[in-house]
Picture 1 (tube, helix red, strand yellow):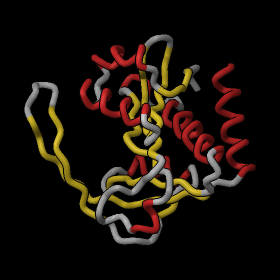
Picture 2: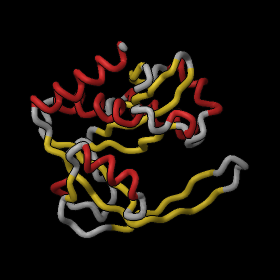
Picture 3: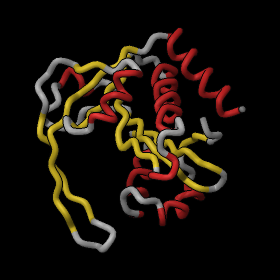
Picture 4: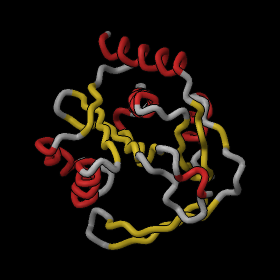
Length: 184
C-alpha cells in the first residue's frame, strides 16, 4: 500500500486541484464551501503535494428523491475518486477507512453510499468492506456537468443504495491498519 496523507481539504490547498482530473475548480470550491459550513468533509488523499484521491463525507446523506427517507439521516460517502495512476494501491481503501472512522467518532453506527448498477468494480470493493444493499429498488439519478472543454453535458445512471453497519472493533481494526500502512 502506498504512503499517503488523508486530511480534510484546507483552503490554501484548493489551487492544487486545477489539474485534478475529476470535476471542475468551481465544483471543488463549492464542496469546500459546504465543508466550511459543516455539511460535509472533503477528504483528500495526498502523495507529497499532489492530490491523488478524494471522497466526500456528507453528514446528511441520501439527497436523491428516490432514496427512502429513513436512509437520508445516515452520513453518506460520495464522489470517491482516485486518479488513474494511483489506482489499485490502496488509496480508495484508506479514504474509506478515514471516512468510516470519522462517522463512527461522530456517534453514528451506520454509513451509506450509492453506486451505479454498472460499476461492478466499485460494488466488489464496497462488498469487501461490508456494505450491503439496503433492500430498496435501484433508482435513476440524473445531473449535468461541464466537461474539460467547457461544454455542459447531461448524465444519468441507475444506482443502488448500500449501507454498512459500523462496529467499534471493525473500525479500530481498519483504521489501525490504515495508519500502520501509511507509516510503513
